[in-house]
Image: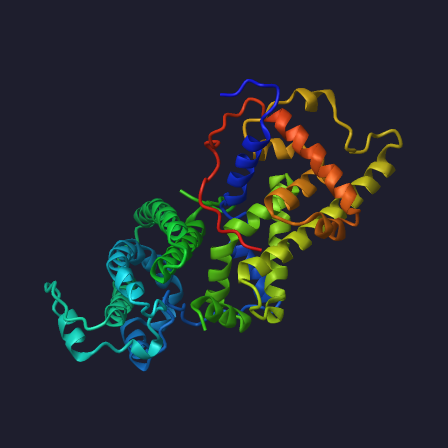
Amino acid sequence: MLHDKELSESALDALIADERARVIAPLTEWQSLSVQLQEEGLMRTAMVPALPFNVSSPRARSFTSTVVPQRRMNFVGWGVRAFASVLLVGAGVFAGQNLMPKLGGNGGNTEVASQADLVAPANVIQASNNATSASYDFKTPEQALTVIKRAQMEYIMAAAYLAAHDESGNPVTSLTRLQERLAALDGVVAAAQNAVRESPNDPLLNQYYLSSSGVRQATLQVLNRKLPNGAQLTGY
Amino acid sequence: MTSDQKIVELAKGGDEQALRQLWTQHAPHIDAVVLRLCGDRDLASDIAQEVWIQIFRALPSYRGDSQFGTWAHRIAVNRTLNALRKVRRIARIETDIEDASATMVTDTETESDRTFLAESIHQAMQRLSPGARTVFALHDIEGYTHEEIAIELGITPGGSKSQLFKARAKLRRMLANVSNGPSPDLHIKKSHVTR
């Protein structure tokens, strides 16, 4: 602890460097921002919320339309993706840590697999259909990434279906559950943010940071709708 | 096309998810810039909303010559300074109308300013005059040159240098009790800010 009359120039520069790197919780809220964006015609509201990975293959669209009634997606999609992403972030980071050295080691392609790769090879599909099997016959890192994307999509859709058919409807329970999700997501987002800062060029970590941040905001939205009028939550 | 560029292209088309992803990804940094320049959280919240609306309005003009964060940062600084000018102009007009003897906010240091000791650079910056805070934030934190600051603020580069000198001297005095280690209320991370 310094007790001089003033801080040294170098110490001030160090504080400035820290301040430069500082980020804060957003001062804005997406809810109010989106209202203004819609009013100005800058944003169109999707009928079905887009997935964290922008999947547009016919197979994905078919899966979405048959499993989850479209009219329910606007509510259940956000809330349930929060739950799904909490579990998937852990699996995704683990998979990314094991995949990234292979992707980057031989000057390989570090871009996330294109949408054309989303239909996994037959042997991979067969392997992924076995819920208990831990040995997948991947030929390339891109195949593994394809399976991750597909698994995430299917998990979210299945969770959304289950949530859509949840008849419990206990407002206290669902409020408590949402709060618990928010608490978990605060930790997930912070962890994902730290991971991205350590490896800013890692596409998988960036994807999970974006998706976890997005579902955290979505959970906040859903939670705030359940709070009494005038009450507002910005974090757990 | 990188995934970031894809998101921007979707956002240009009004895709809600894409717009939201851009905001989620960049708001922590953009809003921090707004807060630094404003010094007041409530004012910064209002201005940040307008900043983001302006960023999204200007999306069609984004050509990808620089990173999106860098481009958005420029808009944030410009828009915040414009808003602050309006606020100060209104404040000066209201002060003139209310009381002819009212003291206007100046860069004159008060006795409490001279003895105030801050616990963090963020706290100390709030005690700077608006002009000094702006110059200090733009130059030392955001990396603007004095020539660029002069254009933004309508002053001379010499005036910018003078303001910076005074700001740093005052900060060093206010932060006399701060240790060389990072302050606990800061999120200390590797800097990935680019301009």
